[in-house]
Structure formats: C-alpha cells, structure tokens
Length: 132
Image 1 (cartoon, helix red, strand yellow):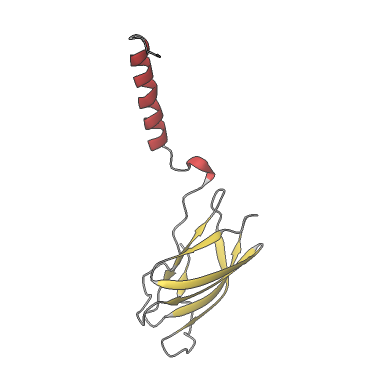
Image 2 (cartoon, one colour):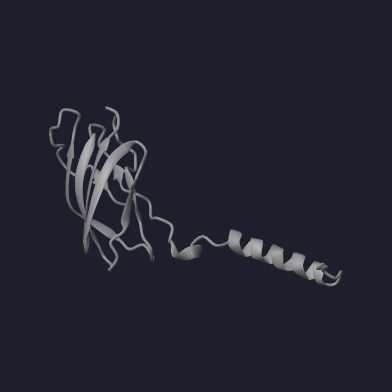
C-alpha cells in the first residue's frame, strides 16, 4: 500500500496550483499562435469572392472558414488562393469569411488579386475585401 506523508501533501497541492495557473496564462502553448483578425467584406452586394493573398514570411497558413460560407483554399508559397461563397443568399458585408491559421508567428498578408461577385454572379466593382 502506498501512502503520502503529511508533509508532502501541501507541497503537492502547491505544485498542482502552480501548474494550473501556468497553463491558464498561456495563450500560445503548444506552438499554435492565435490567428490574426480575418478580412472584412465592405460591400453589401458581395455573395462570393476569389482572392489571392501573398504572405510576407516563409509560412503559408491554413485557412479556416466561417460557418456562414463554404470555401476552398490552395496554398502555393508564398501565396494562397482562397475562394468562398455565402451558404445563404445573404450579404457578407461586415463579416470575416475566413481566418488564417499560422503554426508560427502570424505574418502580414497582402491582397494580390480579388474578384467578388453579387447574387446574380456579376463581378462587384472596386475592392470589397479589406485586410486588418
């Protein structure tokens, strides 16, 4: 039978509390950095977009899509092509249709090309996608 002596118990409790506090204070534990804010749609007529982003660093991130859109991404360093469309015929204005998930530290991205479409499939003029 194994018994823990009384003097060891307080020490064990202190270690357990320190471990809990350390893990709760760690935002990037496990090597996964929090994602930067996603792009924002600024035009009320937008229902879908095709975008090419260029990364300023060596890593091409994974793309995680919002529940309000269906999407696909194709990484090809140092760029990533992203296509998404609204799941319902509703404006995407003000929404962030996706976020970029980096394994390392997030790096700035820039839009190389964007084409967005309205509910009828007509291309939307201008640049309705903005990056934070």
